Amino acid sequence: MMASANPENIPSWDLSDFYSGPDAPEIDADLGKVSDKATGFEKSFQGRVAELSPTAFAEAIIDFESLTQDMHRIGSYAQLLYAADVSNPDTARFYQSIHERITDISTHVLFFTLEINRLDEEAFTNLIADSAVAHYGPWLRDVRAFRDHELSDELEQLLHQKSVTGRSSWSRLFDETMADMRIDLDGEQLTLSDTLNRLSSTDGAVRKAAAKALGQHLSGQVRLFSLITNTLSKDKEIEDRWRSYAAPMSSRNLENQVEDDVVEALVSAVKDAYPRLSHRYYALKAKWFGVDQLDYWDRNAPLPDQADRTYSWEDARSTVLDAYGGFDPQMAEIAFTFFDKRWIDAPPRPGKDSGAFSHPTVPSVHPYILMNFHGKSRDVMTLAHELGHGVHQVLAAPQGTLMCDTPLTLAETASVFGEMLTFQSMLATLDGDKDANLCRIMIAGKVEDMMNTVVRQVAFHEFERLVHDERQNGELTAERLGDIWMQIQTDSLGPALRFDDDYRNYWAYIPHFIHSPFYVYAYAFGDCLVNSLYDVFDGGHPGFQAKYLDMLKAGGTLRHKELLAPFGLDASDPQFWGRGLSVISRMIDDLEGMD
Image (cartoon, rainbow, N blue to C red; front, side, top):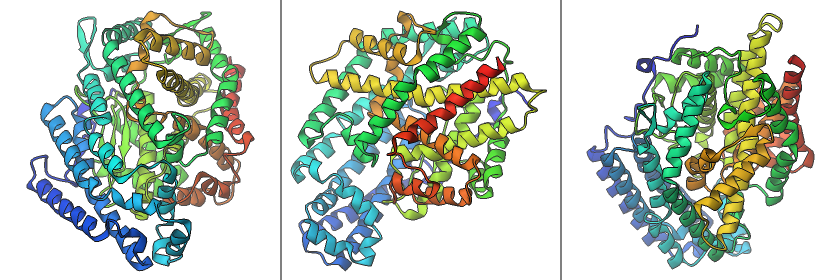
């Protein structure tokens, strides 16, 4: 069943559901149409929102949703092209041009949400009482959440238009620098993705060489990465101050529709659990390796008696589809469409984005998945993760452009649940006695994935928090950024890990710090939530599958309290996070029992 991954059998996506290519005449035609619609919308409604009847207000929202979908459709196509070939200057120019044109067009409709937020409560209550307006209640609720943080129309327009030469340009510089990165390793020029892949080699010398080469390469460019980080942090601090946000992560929490105290409870619970989780597990892994301390390049290393198994694309495909189908046939049917219609781009190649994502695009099209498949077991889990996002996005699409997207915290639910289903399905095929060692290897692999999703991401969150807090007092040197990174990593991973100076600048390649400040805690939120959710499922909760699919179909219409209530869960309950973390702890108990 196992075979070498054959790049010829790994699919590249087909973007023709958007356009035939970046030179398609339909692109300019569509931009012209949406520009006309935006200016027409502006003439019809600017300065008049407060005087609209409920019927006219509902019609305005419908027009706004249509405009938003038209703009997102064109922008999604450009973004997907760019992610697949970041190093291509023609693709980069196309992406930037589309981004600038969409920004100019969207400026004409920026007034709409600002005027909605200037409605007094009595006027808003009268409008929302209308059934057509009430349909958009969840979207209006989320728009109104930002009332206290919005500026004048002129300032909002200025910030919006300057974004193409501000934050987005710095993000593009980061992306293109990463895509162009070639790391010299024993005479080979490796991409970042290929270098990171070698860190999971069964050969310790290969892991060490890759880790040292990456660290030295990052050190050579650390001034650039420090400048990008400092600039974006200062940019955020200025805008946050103007918008009266209490803390650097306050705007993210508001976007995520999660209360500050819930996030603090999550972070505190994970940090308190470091000794029971990461410290304990890595001490156990060091014991398996016959050492007192693991070098950082061995943190994700295969276990000493673990064979260098590679999965073909077909292996990975069938593994995930079988796991999804075993849970619910509808999930497998939706996931199958991604393979059947080439909605996945999986081959590693120079210039391609080194990460993985499922882009929801717009409801009138469908999601697309990007990943880099090297044939490792972690790539199978990445496929399961991104397909979880994809299934979620397909199920939520009927909610429409304004209400299909979920906040980041809940967006990770389906992806992490998909990973758990795949892991449990693979584990169930093993014979406990005959395959005891393989069982241990699989459980250890899952624990390590959870360490990366929960402990590591909370550590990333703490790094961001300290960097943004300190940046308010002045620019941070590369040396200081390295100091913060090393302290956070030591605290979170524990005394069983050993670091050297080549690890000091590993913070520099984390894209979430650049693209989405304070995104990272959403991974820990999603993992702990899923652990609790799976615990409920494993306990035989009646009608779980139907309730789970209903949760995904809700898109962004419900908050976390409403979504979790059918399962008897509440993320604001202090014991909630402990329940999720205890799932990881029990797995480590199992591993210690096998030792």
